[in-house]
Amino acid sequence: MTRRRRVYEGKAKVLFEGPEPGTLVQYFKDDATAFNGEKKSTVTGKGVLNNRISEHLMSRLGEIGIQNHFIRRLNMREQLIKEVEIIPVEVIIRNIAAGSICSRLGITEGTALPRAIIEYCFKSDDLNDPLVSEEHITAFGWATPQELDEIMNLSLRVNDFLSGLFTGIGIRLVDFKLEFGRYYDGDEVQIILADEISPDNCRLWDMATNEKLDKDRFRRDLGGVEDAYQEVARRLGILPEGGPGDLKGPSSIQ
Ligand code: C5P
Image (tube, rainbow, N blue to C red; front, side):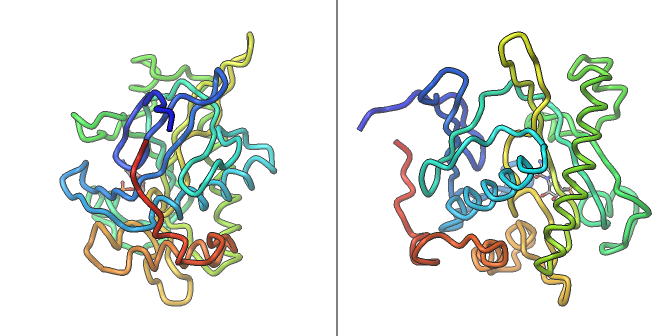
């Protein structure tokens, strides 16, 4: 088995050098972390499900013209992606109040927001991903004003599309986090969507029961984390071949 060069290892994913220049392989781990790594565990099958869910959502977004890093799925845990220069800003889009906005602003969880609200956090584990303003982003040169405009427009389009897609399967898209990168294609530079879109970085509530179908089950010790992720995959019509039995594959990383 050939060993590939590991380019980056995050909490839930590993990036390896890809087969062609300008590509990477994104490997989805079963590791679950919360509160900036303070809480850690393994959720069997999570990586397989997130690989599938992110493939599905990125592909649908690509079809409506939202450029993103996804090229194709390689196997149960890996996908081929375009290499981008990640913009060090996490973009959070909220439709319903939940999580940190509730504690920060004293809003009751579940309150519908007057309109979609975008927040930005500086990507830094050491600093705990602090909330920042557009001023910080442009003044410190993390993104130009034009890039930030593009990021905001793309984020709202992603929100509109995904909100509709999830409504169609009885799920409310409460909030989610996106990351963007600069993709260099010859002389052209383009801002494209990167990272992943999965129950690890979205809040997804069942529309009938308000049951949480996302990482809050892990963060808040609600149990049934795998079942919730599987339910999202099932409703999207993308459970792996052979059903949940296929989720117990080896999780080692070469
Ligand atoms: O914690 P908070 O309420 O700010 O999270 C908002 C949304 O962004 C949630 O869907 C959460 O899963 C996601 N998020 C993330 N990675 C972070 C911070 C938040 O995926 N580092």
